Length: 245
Image 1 (cartoon, rainbow, N blue to C red):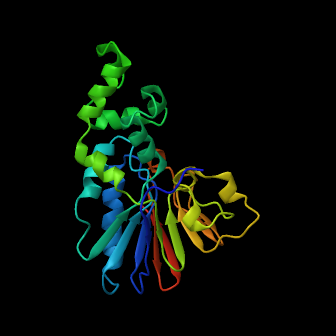
Image 2: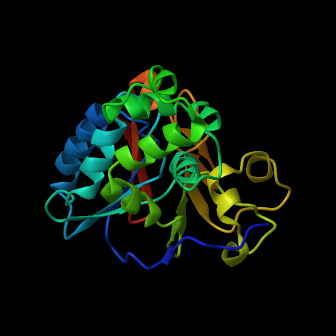
């Protein structure tokens, strides 16, 4: 099991409303619509609010670069924003760091990401005669500010009543000992564990046709890049309200 590496946030939001957004996957249009919906909904609520995005901002959809640029900008007025990492961000950084090959990265839907940065994933391998030259060109072409932003994303946000994380947790392992890999990749040991979850877990990662509402977990990944539906959940004063773009 890999040791914890990424930042792990723990805080008490008090009476602050929290809005969680599911996997975006290159749909900048839906992200903008979701934030507009959140701002309208929050107008009647007191104080500051918090947006938590659950990771997987890139790949598959057409506008990965625009999504990252958007998330790097300040959030709407009277909001704070936490951008958690997903497995697609981890895999992109693995390619940047030479841990996986171009071919492995393309299997993640990264061809769409390259197009959003003005690069042609079909012709690049024809232009560069060696894999090392291809990799070097791509790594130098992607904005360092975007790469640094993805490196700094925390892996979960833990509150007294709710844990926000990309994929889920292993219920048999203390939260402080969970591996980064499990937190962004886990499925079966999370879904089918014999042990109960310690608190409500709000996650994405596993695509579902509509929000999957279970007693102790809530899956907000509604395959936005393909379905055109990006799901948001509001958590406030013990109540959950779900809406989609």
